[in-house]
Length: 154
Ligand code: HEC
Image (cartoon, rainbow, N blue to C red):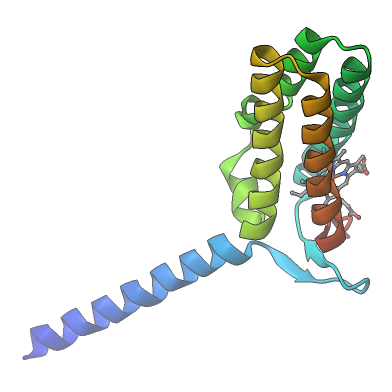
Protein backbone atom coordinates (compact mmCIF):
# COMPACT_ATOMS: atom_id res chain seq x y z
CA UNK A 1 0.00 0.00 0.00
CA UNK A 2 2.81 2.34 0.95
CA UNK A 3 4.64 1.45 -2.28
CA UNK A 4 1.62 2.44 -4.34
CA UNK A 5 1.53 5.83 -2.64
CA UNK A 6 5.23 6.39 -3.35
CA UNK A 7 4.61 5.38 -6.96
CA UNK A 8 1.81 7.94 -7.26
CA UNK A 9 4.02 10.66 -5.83
CA UNK A 10 6.71 9.79 -8.39
CA UNK A 11 4.17 9.76 -11.25
CA UNK A 12 2.78 13.16 -10.22
CA UNK A 13 6.28 14.63 -9.89
CA UNK A 14 7.17 13.35 -13.37
CA UNK A 15 3.96 14.80 -14.81
CA UNK A 16 4.67 18.20 -13.26
CA UNK A 17 8.25 18.07 -14.53
CA UNK A 18 7.25 17.21 -18.11
CA UNK A 19 4.49 19.84 -18.08
CA UNK A 20 7.07 22.42 -16.98
CA UNK A 21 9.48 21.34 -19.72
CA UNK A 22 6.78 21.41 -22.43
CA UNK A 23 5.61 24.80 -21.19
CA UNK A 24 9.17 26.12 -21.33
CA UNK A 25 9.62 24.78 -24.88
CA UNK A 26 6.40 26.44 -26.06
CA UNK A 27 6.65 29.77 -24.23
CA UNK A 28 10.44 30.29 -24.25
CA UNK A 29 12.16 32.98 -22.18
CA UNK A 30 9.74 35.88 -22.56
CA UNK A 31 8.24 38.88 -20.77
CA UNK A 32 5.77 41.58 -21.83
CA UNK A 33 7.22 44.66 -23.50
CA UNK A 34 6.01 48.25 -22.98
CA UNK A 35 5.46 48.67 -26.73
CA UNK A 36 2.90 45.85 -26.78
CA UNK A 37 5.24 43.27 -28.28
CA UNK A 38 6.78 40.28 -26.51
CA UNK A 39 10.34 40.62 -25.26
CA UNK A 40 12.50 37.55 -25.79
CA UNK A 41 15.10 37.68 -23.03
CA UNK A 42 18.53 36.49 -24.18
CA UNK A 43 22.10 36.90 -22.94
CA UNK A 44 24.26 39.55 -24.60
CA UNK A 45 26.05 36.96 -26.76
CA UNK A 46 22.83 35.22 -27.79
CA UNK A 47 21.23 38.54 -28.70
CA UNK A 48 24.30 39.53 -30.74
CA UNK A 49 24.16 36.21 -32.57
CA UNK A 50 20.48 36.65 -33.48
CA UNK A 51 20.94 40.29 -34.56
CA UNK A 52 23.93 39.22 -36.65
CA UNK A 53 21.71 36.63 -38.37
CA UNK A 54 19.14 39.37 -38.91
CA UNK A 55 21.61 41.63 -40.69
CA UNK A 56 22.62 38.63 -42.81
CA UNK A 57 18.91 38.12 -43.61
CA UNK A 58 18.73 41.68 -44.95
CA UNK A 59 21.87 41.12 -47.06
CA UNK A 60 20.32 37.90 -48.44
CA UNK A 61 17.02 39.55 -49.31
CA UNK A 62 18.86 42.37 -51.12
CA UNK A 63 21.11 39.91 -52.96
CA UNK A 64 18.26 37.64 -54.07
CA UNK A 65 16.17 40.64 -55.16
CA UNK A 66 19.09 42.10 -57.14
CA UNK A 67 19.76 38.75 -58.81
CA UNK A 68 16.08 38.44 -59.76
CA UNK A 69 16.22 41.93 -61.32
CA UNK A 70 19.31 40.81 -63.29
CA UNK A 71 17.47 37.61 -64.31
CA UNK A 72 20.46 35.69 -62.91
CA UNK A 73 18.68 32.63 -61.58
CA UNK A 74 21.89 30.80 -60.76
CA UNK A 75 22.83 33.50 -58.22
CA UNK A 76 19.25 33.52 -56.90
CA UNK A 77 19.52 29.77 -56.24
CA UNK A 78 22.95 30.08 -54.64
CA UNK A 79 22.18 33.02 -52.32
CA UNK A 80 18.77 31.65 -51.32
CA UNK A 81 20.31 28.27 -50.50
CA UNK A 82 22.89 29.91 -48.21
CA UNK A 83 20.09 31.72 -46.33
CA UNK A 84 18.05 28.48 -46.05
CA UNK A 85 18.03 25.74 -43.41
CA UNK A 86 21.82 25.15 -43.77
CA UNK A 87 22.31 28.48 -42.00
CA UNK A 88 20.63 27.05 -38.87
CA UNK A 89 23.17 24.27 -38.41
CA UNK A 90 25.29 26.22 -35.91
CA UNK A 91 22.40 27.56 -33.80
CA UNK A 92 22.95 26.43 -30.18
CA UNK A 93 20.17 24.37 -28.58
CA UNK A 94 20.34 26.56 -25.46
CA UNK A 95 19.33 29.56 -27.60
CA UNK A 96 16.51 27.67 -29.34
CA UNK A 97 15.09 26.76 -25.90
CA UNK A 98 14.65 30.44 -25.04
CA UNK A 99 12.84 31.28 -28.27
CA UNK A 100 9.05 30.88 -28.06
CA UNK A 101 7.46 28.30 -30.37
CA UNK A 102 5.69 30.92 -32.51
CA UNK A 103 8.98 32.71 -33.17
CA UNK A 104 10.74 29.44 -33.97
CA UNK A 105 7.99 28.60 -36.48
CA UNK A 106 8.35 32.01 -38.17
CA UNK A 107 12.15 31.72 -38.17
CA UNK A 108 12.34 28.18 -39.59
CA UNK A 109 9.46 29.06 -41.95
CA UNK A 110 11.60 31.88 -43.36
CA UNK A 111 14.59 29.54 -43.82
CA UNK A 112 12.34 27.02 -45.61
CA UNK A 113 10.98 29.75 -47.90
CA UNK A 114 14.58 30.60 -48.89
CA UNK A 115 15.11 26.88 -49.67
CA UNK A 116 11.96 26.85 -51.82
CA UNK A 117 13.17 29.92 -53.73
CA UNK A 118 16.53 28.19 -54.30
CA UNK A 119 14.87 24.99 -55.49
CA UNK A 120 12.43 26.58 -57.93
CA UNK A 121 15.10 29.03 -59.17
CA UNK A 122 17.36 26.14 -60.17
CA UNK A 123 14.59 24.00 -61.69
CA UNK A 124 12.07 26.43 -63.23
CA UNK A 125 14.39 29.44 -63.65
CA UNK A 126 11.36 31.75 -63.55
CA UNK A 127 12.26 35.28 -62.30
CA UNK A 128 8.61 36.36 -61.87
CA UNK A 129 7.92 33.33 -59.68
CA UNK A 130 11.05 34.01 -57.59
CA UNK A 131 9.94 37.64 -57.12
CA UNK A 132 6.49 36.48 -55.94
CA UNK A 133 8.12 33.99 -53.54
CA UNK A 134 10.45 36.67 -52.16
CA UNK A 135 7.49 39.03 -51.63
CA UNK A 136 5.75 36.31 -49.60
CA UNK A 137 8.92 35.52 -47.64
CA UNK A 138 9.24 39.15 -46.55
CA UNK A 139 5.84 38.92 -44.89
CA UNK A 140 7.57 36.61 -42.39
CA UNK A 141 10.12 39.35 -41.56
CA UNK A 142 7.27 41.80 -41.01
CA UNK A 143 5.17 39.39 -38.95
CA UNK A 144 7.98 38.44 -36.57
CA UNK A 145 9.14 42.04 -36.04
CA UNK A 146 5.56 43.04 -35.22
CA UNK A 147 5.32 40.44 -32.44
CA UNK A 148 8.78 40.09 -30.87
CA UNK A 149 11.66 42.25 -29.68
CA UNK A 150 15.06 41.55 -28.17
CA UNK A 151 15.69 43.92 -25.27
CA UNK A 152 19.30 44.79 -24.53
CA UNK A 153 20.37 42.90 -21.38
CA UNK A 154 20.69 45.28 -18.42
C1 HEC B 1 11.50 34.71 -36.21
C2 HEC B 1 11.40 36.13 -36.06
C3 HEC B 1 12.07 37.00 -37.07
C4 HEC B 1 12.10 36.86 -38.43
C5 HEC B 1 11.43 35.80 -39.27
C6 HEC B 1 12.88 37.95 -38.92
N1 HEC B 1 13.31 38.74 -37.89
FE1 HEC B 1 14.56 40.34 -38.06
N2 HEC B 1 14.47 40.62 -36.05
C7 HEC B 1 13.72 39.87 -35.18
C8 HEC B 1 13.79 40.45 -33.86
C9 HEC B 1 13.07 39.92 -32.63
C10 HEC B 1 14.61 41.58 -33.96
C11 HEC B 1 14.93 42.58 -32.84
C12 HEC B 1 13.89 43.67 -32.95
C13 HEC B 1 13.81 44.58 -31.75
O1 HEC B 1 14.40 44.29 -30.70
O2 HEC B 1 13.07 45.58 -31.87
C14 HEC B 1 15.04 41.67 -35.35
C15 HEC B 1 15.90 42.63 -35.86
C16 HEC B 1 16.24 42.74 -37.19
C17 HEC B 1 17.18 43.70 -37.72
C18 HEC B 1 18.00 44.70 -36.90
C19 HEC B 1 19.37 44.09 -36.63
C20 HEC B 1 20.25 44.88 -35.66
O3 HEC B 1 21.48 44.75 -35.77
O4 HEC B 1 19.72 45.59 -34.80
C21 HEC B 1 17.21 43.53 -39.08
C22 HEC B 1 18.03 44.31 -40.09
C23 HEC B 1 16.29 42.44 -39.40
N3 HEC B 1 15.73 41.97 -38.22
C24 HEC B 1 16.04 41.99 -40.66
C25 HEC B 1 15.20 40.92 -40.97
C26 HEC B 1 14.85 40.50 -42.32
C27 HEC B 1 15.33 41.14 -43.60
C28 HEC B 1 14.04 39.42 -42.19
C29 HEC B 1 13.40 38.57 -43.24
C30 HEC B 1 14.22 38.00 -44.27
C31 HEC B 1 13.88 39.19 -40.76
N4 HEC B 1 14.58 40.11 -40.06
C32 HEC B 1 13.13 38.15 -40.26
C33 HEC B 1 13.01 38.72 -35.47
C34 HEC B 1 12.82 38.21 -36.75
